[in-house]
Image 1 (cartoon, rainbow, N blue to C red):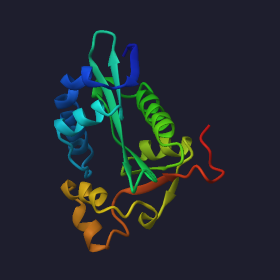
Image 2 (cartoon, one colour; image 1 turned 180 degrees about the vertical axis):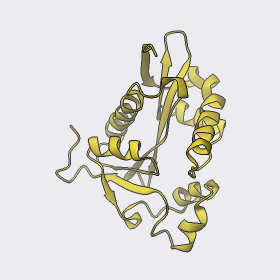
Image 3 (cartoon, rainbow, N blue to C red; image 1 turned 90 degrees about the vertical axis):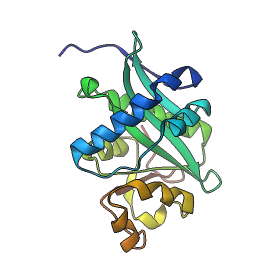
Image 4 (cartoon, rainbow, N blue to C red; image 1 turned 120 degrees about the vertical axis):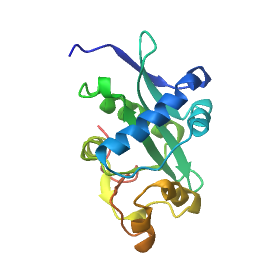
Length: 185
């Protein structure tokens, strides 16, 4: 397959038209992998775009290629990079790496002192996180914000999280702490 040039940028209101596609692509990927994922709404995705807290990847002709957004928690002490998705026709071209790095850099720019984290079941995302300096951590090292954990409630594996009193799930928690020596390259 021929590689297509894809631009990775901070999303804004001009990208609202992609919100439905983003949400649907995330949902379909979760179904294909057979893993849980918290559902997002197009309105939520548009809000992230309006706040300048989203990364979108598009081809020169405007074809949607990928997305990720950031969210801050606990008075901006924590920042999550979430919703990383690459459209099927753009997979295996290192686009996820470019989007993830852009989301990480945006997180560090907007919240330079925050711990950056993610939770995922994807081995590929875990590898990307490791490359950026994230380390696996226990769920107790994540925000204790009830709104954050409520976001997991639409995941089909939420019962595991509840049953274990938020100590474990099928996801792996990974954290980048700017106060440690595991700085990003």
